[in-house]
Length: 118
Length: 112
Image (cartoon, rainbow over all chains, first blue to last red; front, side, top):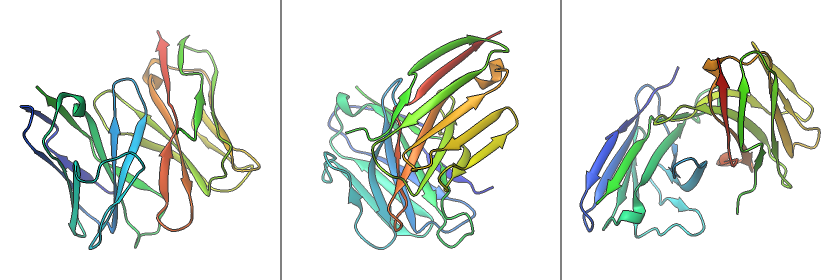
């Protein structure tokens, strides 16, 4: 099956620094990728939809200047948490869809990135 | 606003018991998926249902999509400890980006 690689899997940073998380589709081209956030013992909350070559679409309540998304190629989307604060600590998960494939409704998930801001 | 409500939120049962998890909404979805997630990992897709009234079976798991495509259920027969995890439904709205909204989640623990 399709593989989505997310890196890093765990990052600890100081308050005020920026952190970049990468999401790569390894064996397919992903024109659309999604970024989710998950707090402990809670469900996934969609943050934004990342479209290759265009601006990301952010969900209501998500600060686009705080969470910068870049989808510069068909296999890579990045999420940068700018000026991170302890309340940004969470589990961030990306998913990717292969619009050219037969299984157009399937999104393939990365393993997630645990961000801890001290 | 959470569009998809799952019930129950938590469930702890003995091995061999049956259980049903519900996913309800007032919105219509073009398709609905069920996932299982282990701690510290991404969700793993179990099934996708697209037709109202559709029933799909995956070994001991039975999935049903409501006739009006607003709700779904997951039934597990003879639960095993390996079924333990967070079960999530996710509904897609619209026919363009297929954006999925996740349900509130059901945390299942099966005791040996």
